[in-house]
Length: 549
Image (tube, rainbow, N blue to C red; front, top):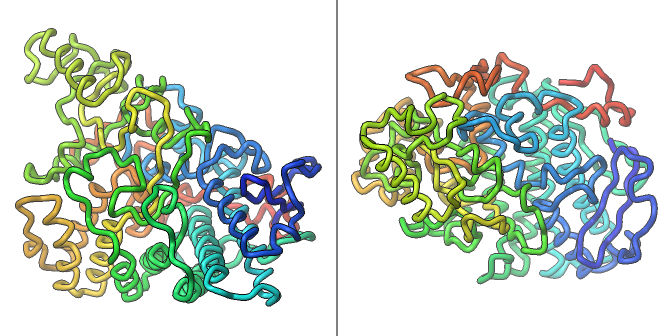
């Protein structure tokens, strides 16, 4: 799998792994200790986990072979799900460090792209680091007290998370292929040289590994110390609730409906659904009450123009944001009832103030919105929106632009947290799983608390068949989880393609989106698969060119 690994514990607390580069981190830094010492005590292993918490969002250029600052962990990998699948729509051409190439399908399907390399190696870095903890624990030299059980619970949960991410991007979807024979990704057990993986295991084998790991995580968490509470940093740690949430995701995407519903229900119980005030607060902190897990991005981690909010928030002060407001699919917007307060986070009638807008309708002279009968009215609304949402006078506006994700300090480059799991997702997983089991009442009951909180006129009883429920669940997931990165895996699970032209059009420009404007469904279209990095195929003795997607 990986040509060489050097395992070191830095004082600031992270494990560094090399992969295919001979000369990457050949020398031991003065602020590091040997891997044997890193694994000598539970306290030291806790620092390894702290490093993984940081790795989820850190700039990778000094952490991973071939890393650069363009894709800073989950700042990039979380929103790519909506960007790649066409839910988060670019309104103009812009300089965005490759971000628009993802929307155009010009990156993930290239074996030499930074996207494929960095996702692959970051996730395997997590696996290698958790292997080190798990393999050391198997020696039996450290007492499995409550603290050590918490460390092992997090290690197993992290490994399940990483394998799930890999198999969902680099292999065919479980429900749309033949999982017993479709090639998945390599399993990696070792944490020291010689550091080679197994060949590509089947999709089913990888899901089985995920299931085994997450069940072990839950078992360890049951006897573990509790996760700290009260701070944004505390929710960067994985706990039993996060483990149940991961179990629900694994089961949902492999069609284990009963397990998915039960795990989701267990996962969400300590995280109340957000009210309107919290929902409209900007999605910029893990302190929101229904956040189960997220990265608390510290100010000293200078992601700046590599951050989640730079890529997709319309309030961040970066050129690709100012020139390219991100918009919602207007067909999804059309489904939102006026009684649903989530509608307020998408500005249908924002003036198109960008003279370079991809739809060719930017600027007052090309205005088609009858709300603005004069140029002064048009300009006044642009100014009003800037005053309400805090962006600068240099920021452009565009119809259907979102204000869901907003910086705590709008108009700046300050870092903000990355939300990785919310209880609302768990309600939707439970509802989908029950619907797939044809348990109509159970699915309705799962949807009811979420729907009634968001929509004052919500009536779940009108969705009284499996087919009606599934269409409604797709709408609810698309709206509730918009921008949070789920659309790519949702479309694979549902076997749905991309068609920005259908049903009146999404609002995307065909000239801007090129081949990504329309893509056939994943079951018949290998372009949905991420390419295995060519560097990995060149270095791994258990992979050949025949293994390429």
